Length: 118
Image (spheres, rainbow, N blue to C red):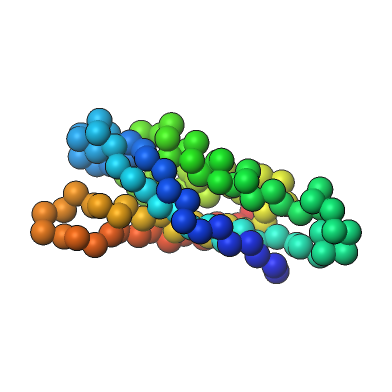
């Protein structure tokens, strides 16, 4: 199956286990791999025959901005479910990172990676 990768989607949101994460918020980064059949678009050269990845970017940003979950596991699952509901997408991989995890003496980032199919 063919795929489209959309990387580096950054958005500010209010998901987090600690109360201050849900009040002050934090940055999230998302990378997507969308599996679909690109053959119709390759043959027709018509945008109507492919997937408009701006839709996926909008879904990610709106979900992060408007959700207030305790766990990033819930957030990443909500993103995957919404992406799968979009036309033409058969499978999605979502990588969600918290670049500034609120952990003392830790300068790295936490990344979750899930793959879901219709």
